[in-house]
Image (cartoon, rainbow, N blue to C red):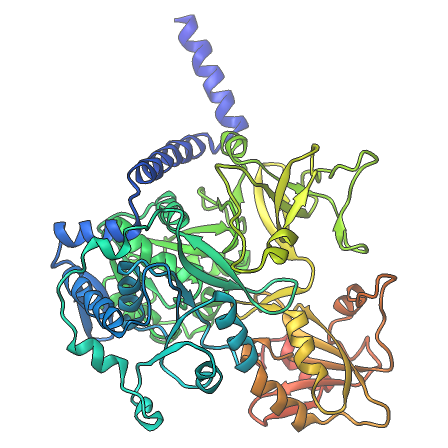
Length: 606
């Protein structure tokens, strides 16, 4: 009897010391099962395509993709992707191993194209359709694509100059004298392709290239192998999704999050509800219409939903789980209070990164939780960072210093065989830049996330900020160097220093540029706006511009940004001329005290 009392006392003490004991154990058990599943996939060389074909056999008539009023079963998707594959094969444009690029919006044809190319053993580059001219052309070139399938013709003249086959889905191709690829697909056979067309295919073969902005400016193509897709996809099982779920995404498919929602649908045998563009007013109507049980989000989406007018039907839905990243604590609370008891599973990870962490206990505001055994298997750390020198702080021995509990620091993840970092396509230099060497001992190598995180005393992980020359706005990464390069060639501009500033009530940071004008020139409010509109997507255009007499630089000729970020866009602190982006007027206008007040109080939307 005494032994039982002692055991009970020890167990109660353990729970008091760690109230999340059961969640920690459940996470480890689930993680073990996931890793075991991935290991079996690897042994069998079993890809997401193999899984798709198996699901087609076991549940051919189950709804697979729902889009507007259209319903496609798993069998429909198989036949449509067969038609795509055969149309491309007959064209002679690509063979196994050749890369094809997609410039297609959020619609089912995007999915059939990817599956069809997968059946040919072809990697696919997902191009961001919001990008403009040079950035878009750069993304196409760095993938090494031999074919381009697109819905629009913006970069068509430049591509036609190369030895690249172009397929246009829209009717506008009639004006260019080219046959519609959609017509070729419609005429193709639905018969399955022999597996011999992809005989050299392995799990280590590239599957997709997904673009990410970094500190260097132009986007880089992160390489996603078939093994990485299977690892990330099965990893979503840690969120608690099952085969009976209906998952809804409004995220762009060219981003890792939206795309992984689709691959997770295949892996679990679920139903995928796709919307071409996020709509706050239609979000819950869609959830009710399609009996959605799981939603994908980024922080902005949750904030937009909370900002819609309240309705009696706010809690009338079947959504039980929301998975994503970037939600602020106050928005998290408001979302739960308004829309009901929905589990919000926040996670943290980079498209090209080698590890994701999960907030599996749904702690409000946290992006993850430190689990001792998980950290032992996949080592990571938050290290001290010197913002003035823009590099990790090292001790007298030359090694990095781990940040104290509660202290923000740079998140780094050890690169190992279990957690490899593949890097960027055709860009060894930028791949190497993401690696930190000799972090805690001679010879170790860590992936530099470029993010400042903080581990609390109770072992929860919180996102703090981004470092370097990248910030996030409207759910997109904005590379300051790329924006600066565009501003620098605008009429009247000599130099530009771009950075992100915090705006109350908004996720991420809004773009701002400190600008030095050429001698004798005045700021062209309309001309600069038109220039930026032509060369930058809407999310990358600076919301604020500050005219300075000189731009401060460091001893290593880097722009000084810390003070500029601290001063923000407050006309009460800044004597320099300030301008605000007025998209309705199509120009930059002087930033008055009235406009400033409207922005910080939320009366004026950015």
